[in-house]
Image 1 (spheres, rainbow, N blue to C red):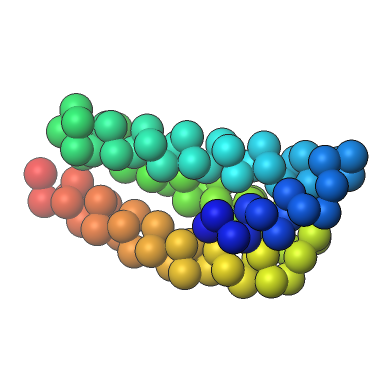
Image 2 (cartoon, helix red, strand yellow; image 1 turned 90 degrees about the vertical axis):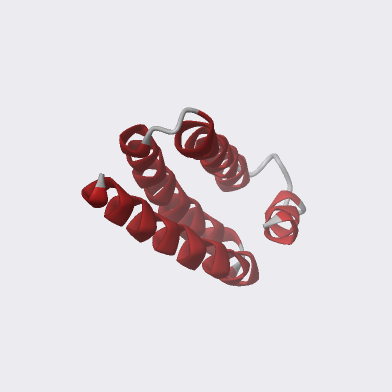
Length: 98
């Protein structure tokens, strides 16, 4: 994640797409923290599910925006996207069981 962000950041903050990409990255990072707080801290499976669905959407947007700037940066985020998608399925299944 960090290397992917660096690749985008190195393209220059004067570029509107770079600023948008960095903002999208920051938003998904905050949503990642929110999910951890909701799911583990507050022990709220439902709030965790809402947070991770927002995280997944923000991460997809981030991956697409990164792709406009650097294919390498985009590819480096794909394992993280796969992990979040898997965690979303797990969170959903846990919500169904409760």
